[in-house]
Length: 220
Image 1 (cartoon, rainbow, N blue to C red):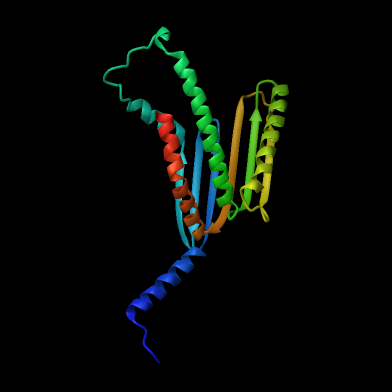
Image 2: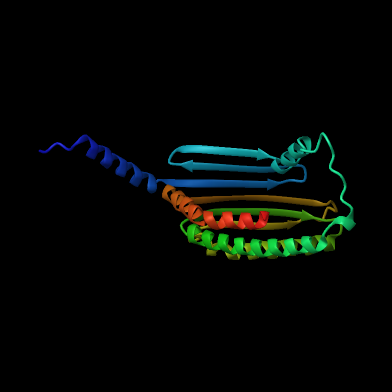
């Protein structure tokens, strides 16, 4: 029986490892909860048997608090700019330009997401919303509007994900206690193969030059 060279064994092992890694199952669990007094974001990524978890409490508040405490102009406040010195024609032109660039970026991101998202299976989706306003009529109207928004968003999901076996529960509960209240509790589970991450990275690399061009156009 012939003995294979050591380099050939290394190549066989590498190919076997990459093949196994490509088809390795992964699961991403996301949890978002918005209460009147706090915001919680939790993500748990599990590939094979290795879990990675990230838990954030009030991340938006903390970011703005950090920015307010570390202002670059803290030593010397910037001078106020009178309205008569603002070149409004230039401002409006920049707004129109930013709008066109944003629309183009949105179309490109939508195309890329459709290409990469079809291999991602949305296994579970739970959305609980509780809303209350001071006026009961406004509460009922707001609850109906939230139902419509969630319905439109849910109808768009099959265009991006595999929803053949999705278990979904969506609830909108009006609160007629007379208090201003908004509670959003959302959790979802995605399943995909580890090789799909490589595909996503490849798509990002392909879109890299176009993204840089858009950034240069915005900054110019």
